[in-house]
Amino acid sequence: SLEAARMACFAHNEHDFDSAIAAQRRLNGVFEELAGRLVKVGDMVAAIVKAEFEPELSLPTIDISHGFLDRGQFDEAARIILEDLRIVDGWTENHIAGLADRTIGTADSLREIIDTRLVAMSELIGDSQSIARCYGAVGELEAAISSVRGSRTLADLVGIVSESHRIADVAMRVVRELANEINTIKADNDRRCPARYGREASGDALGDVQELLASIESALSAESIGARLTAVEQSLHTIEEQAEAVKQHSLTSEFLMNFPIMEHIIDERLRFSQAVESAQLPADGKHALDYLIMYAAKNYSDITVDPRTGAFKRKSGRKTGREAT
Image 1 (cartoon, rainbow, N blue to C red):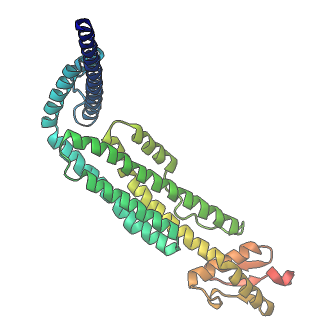
Image 2 (cartoon, rainbow, N blue to C red; image 1 turned 45 degrees about the vertical axis):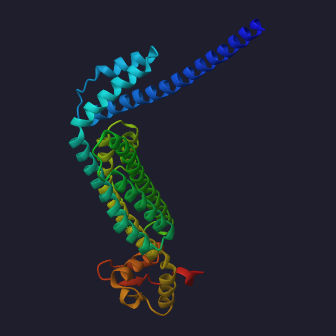
């Protein structure tokens, strides 16, 4: 019937209308998400540019774009932000290229120290885990360098921000691991060393490592890429000093591990003689003298030693070391 046809047509039109409304809402949602992302990018770029290149930068259109976004005018918000980004992209190109060069130079300096000083130090002390960590850090830095190379645009600037975080994180991790290694070896050496033996504290004057770590951690959360790179650059000398300290403390550790052998040799010689000279020990001159001084420190009530000549005598009527047991 005519009425039935009219109702069917109405239902069909109502369905089309509902579908069109749903499609429009989905489209509005896409526009809203896109405009929102663009406005966030605009906020981030403005903050980075102000921190790195132009502290007095003023982009009032960013506030306007936020207003359009709040009122649901997503196309206008996106249009204004894109115009601003094109303008800023033009006059920051040289600045971004310079910042990329600095980022690459800082990362490469850190990479070189790790690849040469730290790997060599780890090989010297036979620390395979440390070697693996070094090569892992080198790989991270090489990836950062590759990512930043050729950067010139605002889109590249976002990548530089990310890579500067990675570089600073590597520096902080290296400083912290070396500090822990130094403390562990030093504490072990202190436990092995006789109380009265005046061992020189080699490599301890490293500055305030905790203060350096705090500065890197602070830079990681800062907006300024330059602040992060400065913190990394300040860490380079400390890392070199730490590597030397680990090396020296490790050599001291090896020296102390050999002391029981030397102690036994000295005990045996003192069974048949009142004196022992450094030349009689199977060690080089400086180490042999140090072993005698250490032995005297452990048996200070029974032994006298001349630290200049290595002359080493048992006090009359005294027994020493294992001879007394």
